[in-house]
Amino acid sequence: MARLIAMDPQAITRLNRLHGKQLSFRLREWPVTLVLSASAQGILFNQHDEAVDCAIATDLASLRLLRDPSQLTRLIKADALQIDGDIQVAQQYSHFFQQLDPDWQQTLSAYVGDAAAHKIALSLRHIHQYLSDKIADLQQLSAEMAQDELQLTPTAIEMTRFSGAVSELAARVDVMQQQLQAFQEL
Image (cartoon, rainbow, N blue to C red; front, side, top):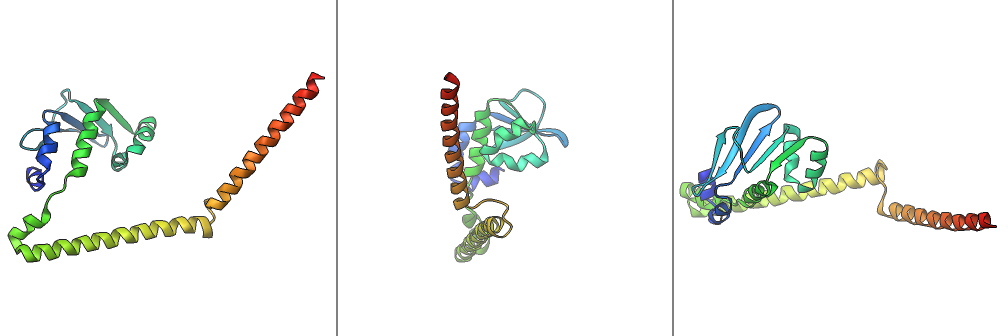
């Protein structure tokens, strides 16, 4: 981990904000507590059951969902995630790892030279962009297929029409309630 952090020139500044803070993870399928401790040299991995700033307990299936902050409430309500302590510590660690941007090209250049490292890095960026575009296209295609071909979800026009019909029905019900109330008062 120290080498990876050293490859990102901005990481040390962000690491200083975590200095002295501990975050523990415990997976229900694995009875070991993994503790991350930030120091000036990097992030250390330990195992202990002592008090930490923030403790997270979850299962493997829910672990990958933790990257999406909008899933936290749902996971907590479903008892798939338990957080004890200062949640800001967990957010700071998450932010640190998300922003970790090692300079792979610089490290690779020590082995293959600057020109080859540049070409490899450029090729990898192009491949990454191509794959990202294809994944976005596939997601769009599957959404369109679910709406148009399989008719699993309504289209935007259908939702607008339905919403308008519900609003119209609600207005009619209000009028009928007023008429009924007026009739009852007679």
